[in-house]
Length: 157
Image (cartoon, rainbow, N blue to C red):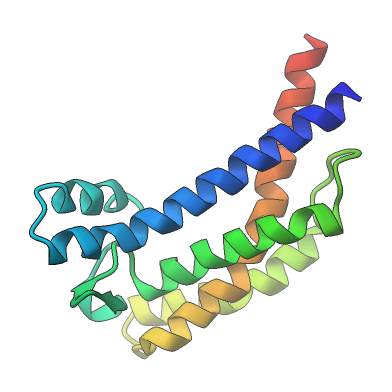
């Protein structure tokens, strides 16, 4: 029973964190549109995880979001996967999805990212977003599994 409660707590924290993260992505352009001195701080929070190239980002309030369209898709997908998690896995135990599923869902985003990096093509923003949206929902199933395993190991020590 304690395991179930810990998993539910970890799930709730992950869901809250995902919602907060997505809110921050939209908060940055809103603050910039109001000439807030906090806008650069919010953008800086996202700079370690995204290149933030304005031409590759969707806009809101006349300014680019704090992450590019691909990253936005990944984070939105992560939220969707987190919401889906209890219906697919439940909280009775922890187990990661099969490696083959990870490879199949990772292939499109890896191929597109590599092709863009070497200049083979430049993918439009909406397509980048959808590639992230395909991959993002898979990530919470690994993230929550890892957190769950850590919590179970900490409990047994």
